[in-house]
Each structure stands twice: as C-alpha cells, then as structure tokens.
Length: 492
Image (cartoon, rainbow, N blue to C red; front, top):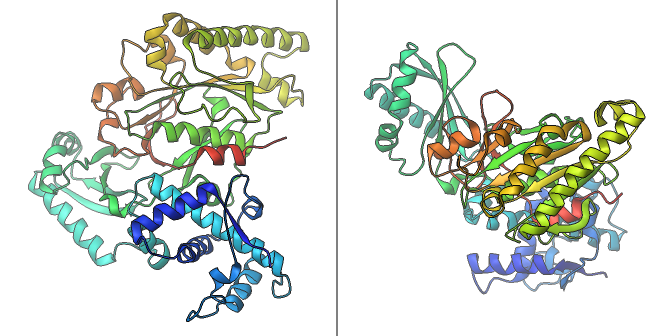
C-alpha cells in the first residue's frame, strides 16, 4: 500500500501543533485533525496536494490515519472510503492507491489551513472549536445583550439613537445605528474614546462611518482576538462561488468585507495603487495576496511582474516566479533606479509600438484581439526608505505613473512610513486606489486615504480600501504563503 507523504513545511506545522497541545501527542492525531479540517471545506482539494512533495518530510501508512493499524483504536477505513467516495464521486473501495492519494490531499490541505492560523498568531484552540464544532460562535442571547448594552451606553453619552442591525464579521461586529438627528454624528465621533472606556474595549478602538441610509451610521467594534476567524487565500477564492474572478484584466482580491464576502477590483482600472501600514499591520501579507491573485488568474503571456524589494525580505524568495520581469528581484538602490529607468524606456517603446499598430492604448489593442506585449505590474516595497536614499527614484516613478496606463504598466507602491516629506503630491495623485492598514497616527492615515480612520484599525490584515473618491471599505486581508504564490502561479 502506498504511503501518505508530507513536506518539510507540513512536518514543521505538525511540530508547532504538538507544542501547542501536548509534546507527547502522536503525530497521527494531528493528521486526523488536519483531515477533519479539510473535510469541512466543501470544495475538493487541488490535485497538487496529492503529488509527492518537492521537499520531503515524512511518510505515514494510511492505517495510522484511519485507525486500522492501531491497537485499541477503532477502524474507520470503511467510513473514510464511503465519505470520500461520495465527496469525489468515485468508488474508492477497490482503488487503494487512489484512496491513499486523496487521503494525502486532504491531510496536506488541512495542515496548510492550520499553518495559516499559526502564522496569523490566532488562538488555535478557539479556531478548532469554531471550525469543527460551532459555526455560530456567539449565541443570539449574548448578541442581544451586547447590543442592548451598547444602546444604553450610547444614550448615557448623550447620543439619542436606535440600533437597527448587527453583523458579525471575521473580526469585528458592525452595528447599524439610526440617529435621532444629523448633529448626533459629530457628537458620537467625538466620544469614541469615551465609548471605548465605558465598554472596556482597551486597545480595540471603534470606528464610525456614514452609510447611504438617511441618519444611519455604521459602528465597527473589534471583538477579542480569541474570536477572530482568519481567511486564507484559497478560502477567499472558494467564496467567490458564482462570481467570475477573471472578469477583469488585472484582478486583485485583497480580502473579505465585514460580512465575509470577497472584495476585489481591477488594477488595470486603477491604474496605480498605494499601500501603507505600520510594522505588524499586515502590509506584507496584503502585497503577497495582491500578487497571489494576479499570478493565479493571469498567465505569463498576459502579465509580467517586476518586484522591487530593498530590504530583501518580502520578495527575495520569488526569483522562480514564472511571471517575473527580467527573472530577477531587484534589491539595491542603484539597480532599482536603473530598472525604473528601463521601465520608463519600455513605456516609451510600447507607446511607439501601439502607435505603429494604430492603437491609442494596450486596452484598445486587446479589445481588437491584438496583444503586442503583456501588461507589467511593478511592486515597490518600502518606497519611503527608497526615496530617502535615492531622490531620483521618486522623479522616475512620477514620470512612469503619469504616462504608463496606456502602455499597460501599473504601479503598486508600498510603505510603512507614510508622510508628506517622502510622498510627493504628484505621486499620490496618480495612485487614486489606496489600501491603508493600521498606522500609528491620524496624519499617516490622511497621507494614504486623504482622511482619518486607519489609526483605529486592529492590525494583522485589518484594512481600509479606497477606490477613487468613494468612501473607504473595511476588509480583512486574506493570508497566503510564499510557497502558495509560487505553487498557484499559472505556468503557461
């Protein structure tokens, strides 16, 4: 009988989980746990989980998982074969090798889901409780009591209102509040700090926003961290369901909204994006998710990505990405300046080529089924540091930002230090799409979003996304690993 094979990463996950539970817990217990996690996901695992891992971890006999090979352990082989036969629509009772392959796929996918919870610093015990045993982590009675308490507290602060609805998202609870009059909005906004104290929220700061309903506002109150429900990149794409993630030229899906629904936009329409957030805000994961969506949904024939990473941390291990521009990640200030200048020259060359073909832009050409060159998305990490070390980089980026849209070149500019001194107004004005993760000061939020709010986020992927002049939309960023970016990237 074939073995169930794990990767080195899988084994690291098993070790981490063993430390969180009990050092003496048998490994096959964790394999069974991973299998249960995977079976909670309605979509069948991607075939790649069935393949032999590139980095070998360990091998396990299927009876170790099903129970057939353990003394004093009940044999669940028949039950697993029945369940997986129905789920995969295939008879596995006489297909031992295929049964083992499918069993491996579920176990490895489950281990991957568990690893994402560990990386996000989530309470693994609470995650398992909510995932395996309870899809409704909070009872209706508890919700009603909290809602009544909030309404009483608001009235004690002099805010006359009625709470109409509550939505519990992956991380926050959003209350839709009907105010008695419009003046109450400014009154409540000024009293958010008092509200924080009276509700005992400590560092979980509430966030107030207007809605399209007359006299109705939304109030976001972060829950305690042990109730957070993170979302993986694969899970986000599963949640798309009937939506077509390929409906855009450059689809970007950074995360899910308060209701847990995927939110995305077309980077080709942006045409440039500014991402800002402090250390620990989840900015790096956000950039990874943007890249993940692009390379997962668009082939190298239609997309190339230029990765600029002066700190040699975020993108350095992506040198084998099939979409990579020049097959290299650029790190030193000198070579970064050179490559940006080369991109500017590429932009001019593209415009001349389009003119020869009789088109005003790459979009116009592709609409006529002509694609003379792929789109190019340039990721620039730690922009503020780069500009402070090499001022000419900003000048070159401004020139690219002002004219590159027609040539199919788009910028994703990221920084953990958003301030007016290092962000020229010309650069910001050419990036009307913005993503703000948690920042330290309201002035930093204004640099990214042109308004306050990001200073009240909870960190670790909590973000406000602003498209053009629309009101910011609050999202929870999805989590992906570098290995996922590489493994899910289209190879053709």
